[in-house]
Length: 224
Figure 1 (cartoon, helix red, strand yellow):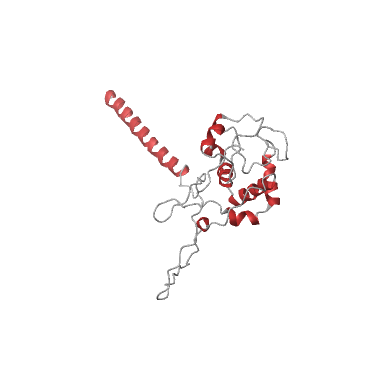
Figure 2 (cartoon, helix red, strand yellow):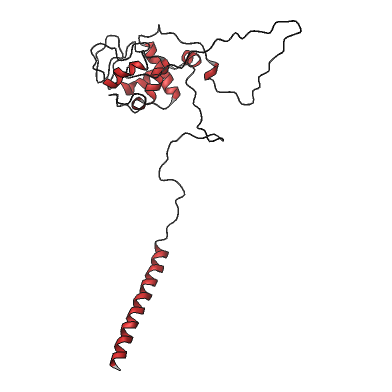
């Protein structure tokens, strides 16, 4: 009889333990209820995709349209973030980076007295000179455009700021570098615009296409 009582106690203790565990689980679930966040913890800046799934095409700057109206004062203000490493005055000393007077149109990795990285010297096979497009590519993201460059600047993603900065650089010893003609191929299409082609009158010769091919997009720059 005492043996049965002993086993009853053990069995009862086991049931009690199981019941206690179930109660704790239910209470914990009510107290520590988790919900999906309304917003992402961080934003990933990825290019938006068009309806067909392709990434949106970003046209290079139309220098012929933008340079004549660029804000040189804003470009000079943007250059303030470059002054920790670069000088801009003619004949100025090299610093952490080379002097940038006359950099627009200058041969890549060519400024006297500056020790360029192997990556920058090797980039001359891509960009022989610092063209407007080359500078634009490089300033946008230096390390991405020239992997291994010593330039630690993260880059300027804002296109108007880059255009103003490059226009300012051109005004400092590079005014002889020509500004190309406006390039319609670099202008985004106007929504809803229609192209109307007039047919020639009877007996009249069909008009010839007087638009010349636009120059190839210039490569991006290496550390000036």
